[in-house]
Image 1 (cartoon, rainbow over the protein chains, first blue to last red):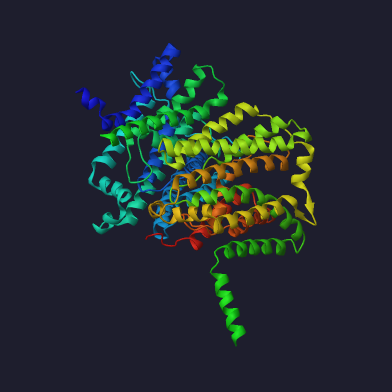
Image 2: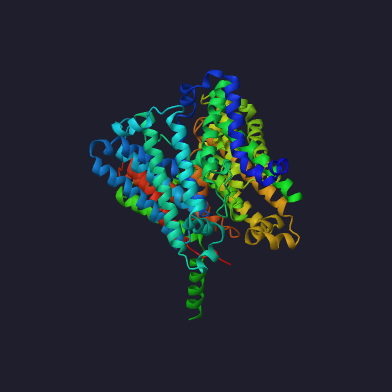
Length: 313
Length: 322
């Protein structure tokens, strides 16, 4: 029993959950009042949009690409959500579907022309931001009532955010880790050549994963404006880096289709808590981003130690 | 007959140069702009393009060396390094002309230290370079915010004069950067270090087996890239009237874009320095053209993004399979 618990494999898988628990306990220790429904709600409020963005990024990382435009994309969705979706719902829905289609097309373009995804998505970050400015030139807008209603839902025992985050993690886990096609999708990141030789279309896997990223990015933007009640084109620019950090923190790897959906959700929550942790430590808010970087480094250091222990066996 | 054949051979050889396309695109965009203004301000636009392009080229050189190391190598900490080095050096100089040399050394040292830190994460903790430089950029961006306290610190007057001075329309800074680019071209193609970088990018395993000091070469490259970012933060602070906290932001895209548009292979192992200048001029002239056409910020951003993607789609797409 103890041997299993100390085995590198188990430790590595448990690391994301362990770091979240440690952080949460530290916050409870510093400020016991957070240990309540209301406190948890305040702490984890913004975790859901970040979790969606992280899942979106994870979809892209699964097929060995990287999306440097997800933050501005979430901003565009927020802008559409707070304008068209409220005033002319049909146009709003069409625009959001169009965005997902563009994402799918990006996957096709990157695959067919063998382009570096970093550059393409970096270029797209300009396009998304520009479109968001066209839709919503100045911060503001009105969020549709139903989005607001969902995001402020009063659920029993624990805040809505926690239920939603768990549900997202579990659903994506079953979709990608347990289903047959999910295995093919991950295989396309692990060994594209053998997946292609086995008769699967690599184009299709890439398009699917990019479209999924567009879908989860959309959920991120909509859940975000449900909390903020207004939108701004620049509202989510930092999500790009946060989402990458979240995936890695959750145990995902850059290449090889090694991902962990539940880990990614936990990673997103850890990053959200990192900011609050600083506040409770009474450190100046200047260091908030730095703390996220610091936590990332510490967790990765632990992982390096575990991996080294494994290699020694 | 022979002369014609030599000319034709010369032309084909020239067309094979990947950097030519960046310059051609820059020229076309410039032409479109001055046709729109009916020939007015063509010289001024070029002069401004040289001045602003300088900064992209300085960080682009470092980024190019890093990217040439092979897949997965990229430095995302350039903006944070620029901001940190700029803020630290401006604060220490405290607008004193006598402190300029000290300030420059401080900026370079900040850059080098961040580079050492980055490579420490990559080598000792086996963190992929993208995540390593990303997390260190979080840390140093915060450090810059905490240290700079959000105030724009003015540069010493002589530094401001130097960074904005021109000789016959040519910015002095641009001339210095051209010299820097030439030196780095020689380093890339004629020194053991430069050739090691290319060899590692082409096949890291083969490079290691043939006795190249892979770790040392990568270490030097990351440190050099960060040092150049520090230098860029220093001169950009002088040029733009002080260090501000978001001054590095646009250089994340710019540093990567000039490398790729300039014809350097993203898969590594093939670098191209002249292309950096072509791409930097192109990027600046593109924004100028869209401004001249009187387009709003939204359209301008969309067009910039689309044109970058178009360029990479047309220029890239070479098979990287081996």
